[in-house]
Image (cartoon, rainbow, N blue to C red; front, top):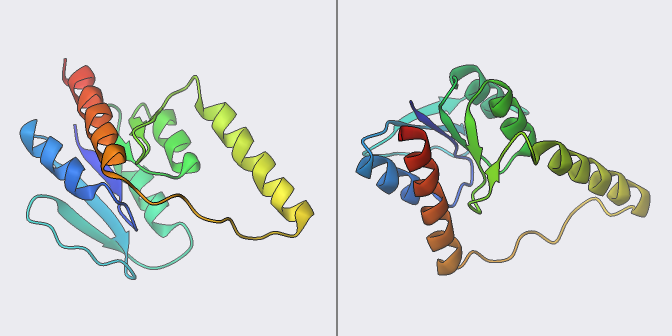
Length: 148
């Protein structure tokens, strides 16, 4: 089992590496050439810039029972389709039971933005220490569940 992180602007890389180290699980960070990363723990794969290049590389690499850390619902859906596990940086687990609803909500929100003429969102609220604690607990629970 490996952990793959969609690492472009991912705020939980340090937490993923700490927990993965505790469970002796390898991590692969994928980023494009605009977000070059360095790590003492993880393997870093720098993917050429291009729309969705990192997403496609991640999906090509992940296998059944791997973990994918991403905020992209589409990437999560493809990972689930390969039998991998997926978790959002908020700590929410993507599952076969919730991914269709999440994709539909994303589609409807995009459609509503197009109709209203608003092409951008306000952005997410500032990340808190509580957010990090919640992600760590949820991520560690996922690892424990998979490793048995």
